[in-house]
Image (cartoon, one colour):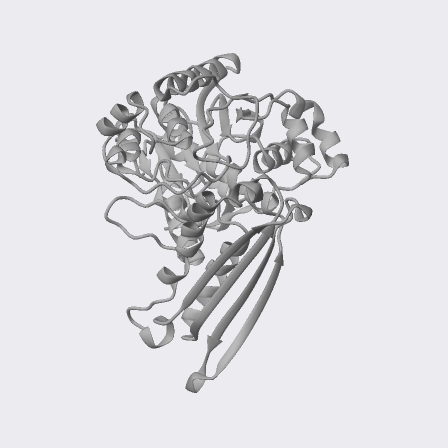
Length: 437
């Protein structure tokens, strides 16, 4: 039987598990409402690997949840932070992702969730503001307050362990600098209120110090720096990121491997988006758009093999645009124009118009990341979990390695890891269902 990296058996999925969410907006409330609907037996977990996925077994396929010991949905307890004061029900109504009829069914559960005061800095997110913000500007005080929030939440809800998933806004682009290169430098920077330390970094630092696994659902720098990966490894806590792979980028990582496998050339890929929710307002700021643009542009060149097939992909032009258009709300619309060429260089075009419900696509990713990071944590794994790249636009990888963007290669890596985890002993109980290698 495979043992965990620390030589111990995997801890069982027992007791309550906190799911802490910085940013209780459209994605977070859609995720929570969906879990409550599944708990109530009137919705299916469509789009969720952990709830609907299957792995090859000795006598046929088995459900992921039968192969590995995942936390039960009934054991999840939700909390988080936001700059707005209303309950999760109020936030869900404002987001207008789900119908009022569906929200009414889960209203009692959502109304019990009131966000804690957020750490917020308008230098990093310029186009929104709100009253539910921690006082003062001292970064060390903010870290201490976040850590106190986490401890209080865990105690109040009798939680044995926890996972945090960033569902907040895209911050302005921050390049890695000296303050991000080591844990010592970062901690000195926190004490000195260094301007390159964003609120998302403070959240991640606080969570890791409290032993909370962390997933970054935005393209912010956050854990994708040596300082925080060093902290994650020191504390024995897994991290994953960054930027949920939904909508237009999801389609790119499905289509581009197809072009590559058929040796079809791609000369241009023009993408534009319109969206009108809080995320759209945030991305209307050039600084935040720069962060998102870097994430969205990173996909194609690792899939389309320029090194071995320069005649097919060396001159690829890749453009990405995002426009804030309030009437669209959360229902983002993505347009793609793809210029491809085939035999004897003859050109062809593909046009895609994806009328996308962004939060509907992101919500199951929040669930999967929470459950799989918890699984990894109980298995004794720490640091960057690159096997979770399947869920991200700009996958965080271990230092010195290269990200894989091909969705099918990412899925293969994830399945291989789950197969290995399925063979581990479970402390104090039966081993997970054995599955084929």
